[in-house]
Length: 164
Image (cartoon, rainbow, N blue to C red; front, side, top):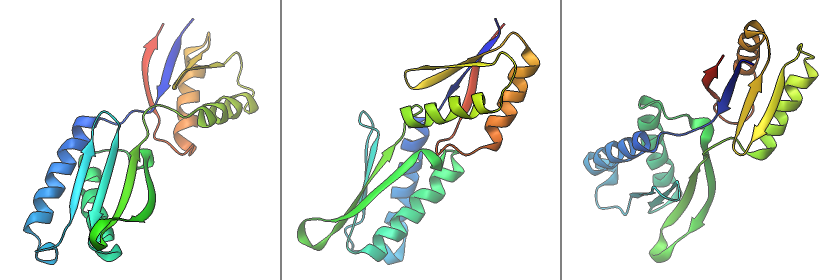
């Protein structure tokens, strides 16, 4: 039976490249001269930590990083910004988490969305942090892809592993 997988992944190499470009730009910008602005990327954890002197510089630091991530086609829907925290020696910090995979709640929302559409013989199955959608009709699978692209489930959806 034909099927395809719906996933939501962030390319960590592209995030690393965006972080390096942002660090380089911050090092060259006049408004960051002499300040404690830093971007730390913890690749195994999938987190970014932004540190700056004050909230204004923290916001400017985020805008630099965000611009670089957009240019490198990192899906910003999968970037979850935490609260601003006070750090040591009058600095502020913000933890940013990269969402890898489809969260359970979003997976349920997608499955419910497809069942509410009453598409003939389309069967969504949640498999960990991804969904497998199968149907005897390839045309139905194409229409499911189109429907899912139109909706916003809080994460960037990618389609792959199409099988006959």
